[in-house]
Image 1 (cartoon, rainbow, N blue to C red):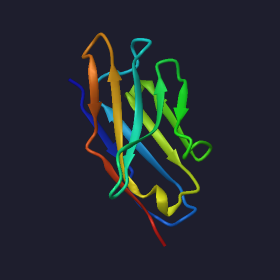
Image 2 (spheres, rainbow, N blue to C red):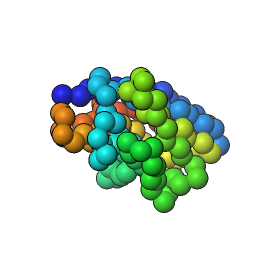
Image 3 (cartoon, rainbow, N blue to C red):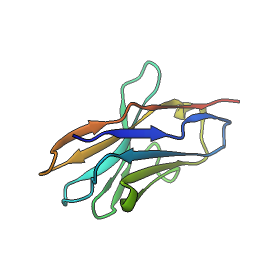
Length: 120
């Protein structure tokens, strides 16, 4: 099994930046179809995909955050990051880290979520 722990959420003013971190208890990026990502869920809305990063470092983003958010990783620390810039009130949500593992510990894993609030 894999545990994911997010950190870095908080209150930020519109136009500001935040960097979320996610630490995994095991190596994630081992096989070609392994990946990690971020989802978010705003109050009263369905959970939505923010973006993913693959074993090869390829990133994909939802259209709503493209050019605004950046996902990166640090393999040695089994960590993935979400850099959020030019934040808007509509970015307010609980942000969840996810991991998709194939072959070893195969399955989908979720963190507990971290609250991001964008407000003046």
